Image 1 (tube, rainbow, N blue to C red):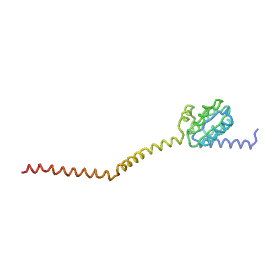
Image 2: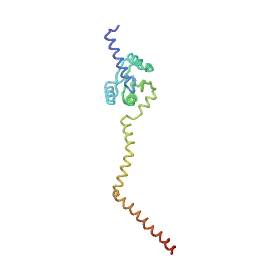
Image 3: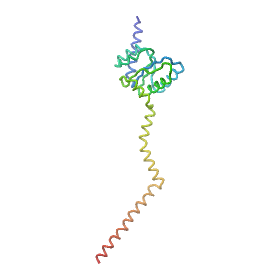
Image 4: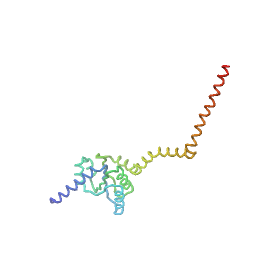
Length: 196
């Protein structure tokens, strides 16, 4: 039977896992069989740079943590070797990186299941997440959409400046009222002739 110290350590591991799950927006379970040290190091570096927390965890700890967080449906994936990846801010980073790595791997590395916003999601949903662009690309697209009207306005202003500025446009507007004034006396003349 394990000592009280070991039991306390195990409880703390489960509590830490539960907090990690609650704080994350997405989490994925991975079978990491057949991955060599060089590939594992490269994968972990890429995940770390993307803000993904990736660790190898005992299935019993995950079972208890999932029970505490309402994700017991993920227990079906807790067989064999399991690595657990969570991300606190980016919904697609873990799925994009891990699914991409699994597609290239031929030695048993595979994504088993996952959750998003505290709900278990299907593999189809995980694959859809993996196909989305990164957070930075999405933000750049949104920024581009906001900048487009401003850029169009700036080009229109520049076109006015290139044609000589507002002053070049003003004489054309002043010439138009002068032409109207010249037409007005001509219209009055026939009225005077009729009076004679």
